[in-house]
Amino acid sequence: MSDPISQELFARASKVIPGGVNSPVRAFRAVGGEPIFVKEAHGPVLVGADGTEYIDYVGSWGPMILGHAQPDVVSAIQRAAEKGSSYGAPTESEIVMAERIRDAVPSMEMSRLVSSGTEATMGAIRVARGFTGRDLIVKCIGGYHGGADYLLVKGGSGLATLGEPDSAGVPAAIAGTTLVVPYNDAYALEKIFTERGKEIAAVIFEPVAGNMGCIPPDPVWLAALRTQTQNHGALLICDEVMTGFRVAWGGAQSLYDIRPDMTCLGKIIGGGLPVGAYGGKREIMQKVAPVGPVYQAGTLSGNPLAVAAGLETIEQLLRPGVYEDLERKGDQVQALLEQHAGAAGVPITVQRVGSMLTAFFRGKPVRNWDEASDTDREAFARWHAALLEHGVYWPCSPFEAAFISLSHDADAFEKTGRAFKAAFAAV
Ligand SMILES: *Cc1c(COP(=O)(O)O)cnc(C)c1O
Image 1 (cartoon, helix red, strand yellow):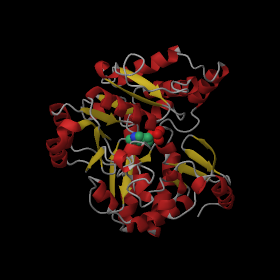
Image 2 (cartoon, protein in one colour):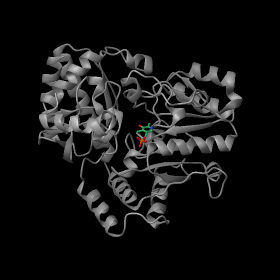
Image 3 (tube, protein in one colour):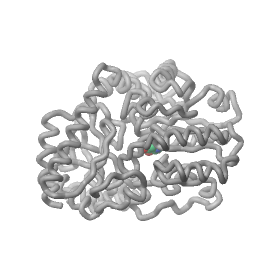
Image 4 (tube, protein in one colour):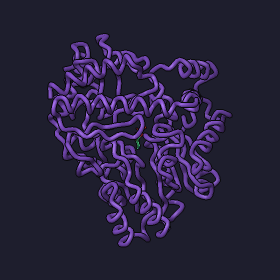
């Protein structure tokens, strides 16, 4: 149950905003509740409209790796704002961001800044189509790559939660340019390339799936992605909007030694402000206007405030030991989940890569969308409601990853442990 003030705000919001929210995953539909409205947030703590404090494991769905209102990020934004919030002309900070990105993710020899992850994947796909002269793209069932028409086909959490695998309003002709394959299935990938390899511009994939719950990639499948695309003249687009700077400084591609042609970033590189980036090999990115024929533009692209927040965030992540610390914290949350689920006799499987994880309410591992959807949704909903009651704000869908920040400390984990204990008992 949400608090009375949130309930009032939700009723008011629902009159002027569809579903009362500006993005469907915020609506608590998957757990049959109503959203908590947020007043403010600091470190690992989210403050609800009525002043109740929650330990936050959503982290704005990924960006807040340092925790909320991190002082250095706040002052970087303030300093930038004092110098003007948008010019519509290039700045040195954008160069620094592109250089930082290239240093961390060497496959991104050149990159373009945009204002969201959605724009990043749209840009990358247009470039891939322009570069190859082909129309078809391949994505995974349950993979989410933002809100573009041709990417809302079997799109994972947000869509699945509404019981719609695909969105209305997408012309069949456009959905028809997207082919889908199961995640982690090398055989299905080979089959689709054997049948339609000459028409495929690119495969876009999440190197660690996060939008059907956290699913690590199978190395055999990763190898097939690279060889199949290469052999058929298609590009491999690694969508690291969630995993970039999250699972490692160099993203999942550094962790699993993936060598993509193009990469998409977002979330963390904006430090909580709206940013995305796409990039890749120089010869591919030279297709982008004004040097090449593929048009892509944005009034607020490379926005000075967003770049300042992103650069400061990335800077903080360069400190020694940061990713070891995130790994330890992730391990701690996993241990708490397993301990209390075990004690209560609730079968769960925790899947985790560093500081992103999902507790699937099923007793077996999850490798793809079919298996992710075979979880106990009612048990999850009861667990989620009990967590809220005990001061833990967990993603409101069984098909989402939870995120841990550097600001999560012993106090936060103590409160979390108590909440897990009570919530598993309530399942
Ligand atoms: C969040 C996400 C996107 C979309 O980013 P937005 O900023 O929400 O548009 C794309 N791909 C992946 C893998 C994501 O997790």
